[in-house]
Image 1 (cartoon, rainbow, N blue to C red):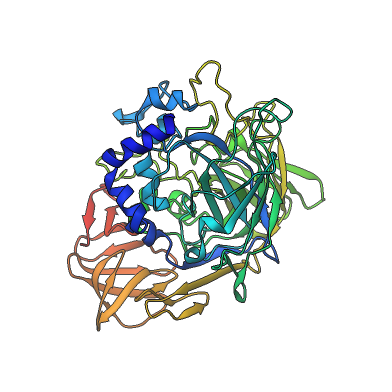
Image 2 (image 1 turned 120 degrees about the vertical axis):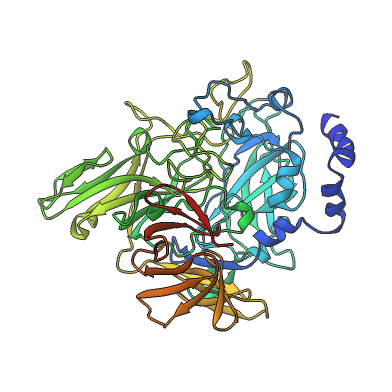
Length: 525
């Protein structure tokens, strides 16, 4: 009755989204689901579902605030330390999403829905993703189709491996209890427009892939790692549609500088959180992770702290911290405030963490495993159905993740990634570096730019520019707003302003840059 009542009320409160549901998905969803994959990882040799675990129940699409969220079985944080006088955004108060928020990235609103992430080993071709691609078999034998599906929150162009589905999948009773309902298996089925995954030779059908599903309310079934890969740091694909850029740039270079030459990307079975609500911060490696390596004598070595130079005999390796979470401390938060590494840190809550490393390559190659001890002074991770800091008494929340030891795939010699897109003419392309994407050109160091008024270019980063020469290593650029600028491939997004005599760091995708001397922001458009 409660869900039906909110659906009726939604016709008035969220009429725009309901009208779109009868017609077509929201424009923002359509923008998100364009077929753009840039430097996306191939986690296995063949396409697989690495996990598809029932995530949590009833808290997606809850209208209202704390009272309604707690009534639906969610949680709400109050014990927060928001540094710098920051007003906490809703996402650090609760993991429950409102119907209109769901519609932005899922096309349509849902009400009191359950969630389940389907974690693929190859990236998804977004335009082929539909709710009808998924068939869930419950423990009761019932066959269920999700209500909506999206690649959110794994929206960056070098991510896009996870399909998150919302619908009615179960309850919180444990297996064996009378009335318990939960997901038993998840299968990809042929709905007439099959789901496609993109591999080294292009798209392939995912139809027929299936995997058992774990129950998140059973001890031992919390979120875990499904893969880990060590490669050279690249910012290729570190971007997203502009309306989703609030936590960008969050790559290793943006957070830790050029020293961060190596990226250990870990891939997870679901959203990871310290309590089910709060985000993970760049400075929290030592709270959750440690790395295993061997030294020159083949003795085991544990890498447990950041900014410590570990001598492995033939070289040094240093853990810098965690990237692919949110913005760097001290940067502009996009709302007139400053980013701090506190409880109110705005994280992207996706299925990836980048553990950034510095040091000698010979030593970096000696890293063998990434571990989540989840005990003995280390904190466990929760998925977004966890208890938060102030759980409601008597409510069942999802359990913490187990201790986990994941082997590291060494990809320093072969990054094992794919770039694929469909441009504005409908032409498909598969390639690594500089390509046309929907009328724009993509450069692996300058990002997106539009070459429509030669010799002037419109850059997503820099606005209207006139490049001088065609040097592929360094470049003088005339900016329509900032005059002469100079940059080098190895240091971009840092550039030199000839007019101001200062270095600036480009805030990628925002049309702005920050003066390295006085933190003043300049705008390119």
